[in-house]
Length: 320
Image (cartoon, rainbow, N blue to C red; front, side, top):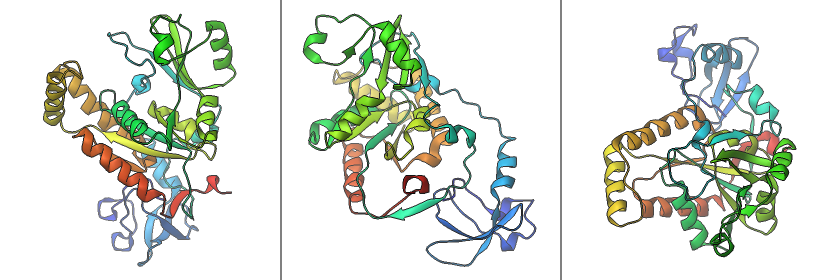
């Protein structure tokens, strides 16, 4: 599978532009010849003539000169319902997937076509404020037999309301720190002096109960999740244009379901959404623009229903 867009007409390095093969991110290619260190011959699996594409080595060299201008580490929302301007320090576990880190510049990926199968996790990726949690809750309410989610762990002391709503699992700070060090958490962070995190075992518990586990996580958690252990279906919830997002916020505020956001906050959501798509877009199985929550929910459910009966291209490491 190709994970970048390539147009030979815009490539000054290709020896013959007419011999090049124009490809898009997500195209499934059959590599015909890899003898040249810089140029491979390939064709699309659905047919057509073979053409030249940049080799893995050549494209890695080119992309290595492009500096990433993003810092997406605070994007996860573990602390449900919390307000205020304090930032959480978020981290992800690299020990679970060292290969991912070694190949950060993913250019091509070997994939295999497999019969329809059930994914273990549904991973919702998106910028803060884009509506991931609302979509997750709609799925959980509309189909509790097929979908479940995790309860975050925290080191803070329980409040009286916590006994009723079961929003958190409580543990001691020392226990949580030990488990973090032992690699038991998918991601974790600190807010107002308390630790919060998602335990990997809690994901397995949902799956073992026969449900698909829905996760709305920091995009860097894909470094852990994109393995055969979790078999994720990754959905990017994309922010709409600024004016649409502003109108949605106004409607939500009038309905009493959301707080007012400033233009700066809304623009930050749009900008961060674009950055996430640019950096992690090649890992997304589906992109949904959330310009209408009900329609986004219908689109998501429809796509998940179609997935049940479709053959799928997956990383070869999931199969062998």
